[in-house]
Amino acid sequence: MDQLYPRRTIWLYVIKDVLMSLSGKTPQLYRHDLPALQSKQSHRFSLHVNRIPERLVPRKFALTTRVPDTKGCTKCTVARNPYNGYKYLCGALPHSQGTGGWYDPLNKFMLLKHVECTLPQPLNVFEMAITPEMEYPMVCVSVKQAYQSDRLKLELINMNSGASWFHSDELEDMDGTATVIPRRENLSVIAVTQLEKDAILVCYSNVVKIVTLQGRVRTTRKQVSELHFDFQIESIVCLPDSVLAFHKHGVQGRSLKNGEVTQEIVDKSRVYKLLGSDKLVFVFTFAFVTPQYFKLNSFVLYV
Image 1 (cartoon, rainbow, N blue to C red):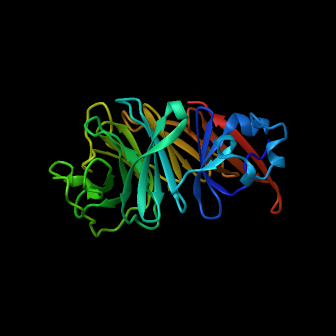
Image 2: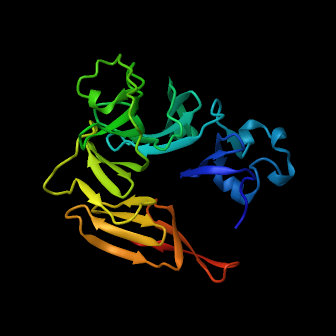
Image 3: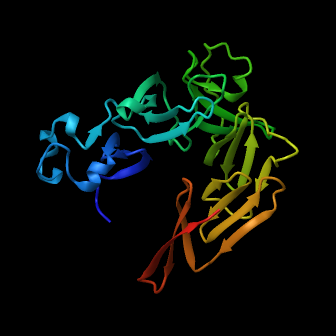
């Protein structure tokens, strides 16, 4: 184990040989050259990088560079457009939101769109939604419960038109100029994940719902539209045919076809924490041996 970068970091993403991070006291987006950081040597200098002050290294040889105009960025999300293969990175800034696209020749994300807006505080949701009809993604920034209905209201930032902020039920007849901020209570959303072109999974409390982009409950013969768990969900992982819901003392999987339990782990002597779910599901656990000492452990959940 080695320290690659000596700053507080709240978000990480690896693409090819590049590590993107939100780091610093006031978070800012950074780009790190992973192979060079791991070897701790630059391509042109004979001295180790950690012996050369960062400010004296020419920018073209720097192993870590700040992404301009990202100071105060609190959240980032990355998604791949399945219709054209492009990869996008969206960042939540204090009074705006920016979207960058991955550019292979330069091996970096390049700014594509920047929208001035006031984001909800706290920002519990920040996830992209991609449709084949739109060139750039939309970003979901909050979810609200509709009055006297099972319908959800998705608040979206649209990077494709003049409507920088609109509501999910306006997607059908949006004229590209409306800006609407409805006054409803936000749900304490745990996760928002796009499953298909018009299927968005929303997880809150002990409920998982699958809705359309307009917020209507999505009903099909092949898939249930709602799952209920008997515990408060802390985090989830979406698999092709099921959902893994993690709680303090374990995990339970339920089928998206019929809602039945597919797998379950419960151990009251341990505390479980989901670390990551990119390809493999990494889980961190610890168990108290005595009131003063606890045993750390971690494992990979193969699914």
